Image 1 (cartoon, rainbow, N blue to C red):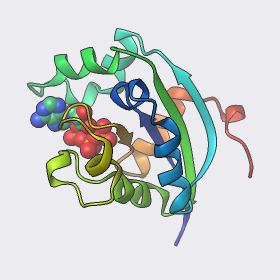
Image 2 (image 1 turned 90 degrees about the vertical axis):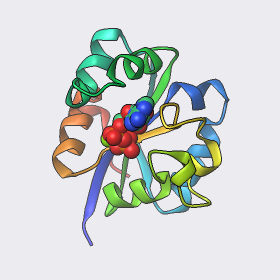
Image 3 (image 1 turned 30 degrees about the horizontal axis):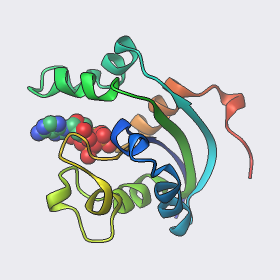
Length: 141
Ligand code: ATP
Ligand code: MG
């Protein structure tokens, strides 16, 4: 077991539904600790850069539209195996395939409007945390 940090986003559909707290409860219930957080409205440039890896995918344009459609909440989660722990509590990308009791099974609207983002590995976690937060923004708890 290793203490890790991962980048999480409460996406626009979940912010619009006023379930930020319900989602934070899921993180805290599995022992993840919020060590930095901020609400922000992504610009087109930011959303395009954040999802650069998906630029060639057919859904890229719509994904950027959706991620800029309203404010998001970005947070750094810390805990044992935080990256995989968060992916587990999020559930599969497509809510129809997500395990019962996961965030996406319970709150996602669709494969696109799927409530949350979570880093998928140590490298992306580091770069995605740096994308949104300065070192000094991340607190010791
Ligand atoms: P995320 O990166 O947001 O944590 P993920 O790793 O489960 O989600 P990715 O394959 O990285 O899924 O896709 C990034 C995001 O693009 C998805 O969360 C979803 O919002 C959107 N997306 C993925 N596949 C599709 C699709 N087939 N149609 C529409 N949108 C999609
Ligand atoms: Mg992903």
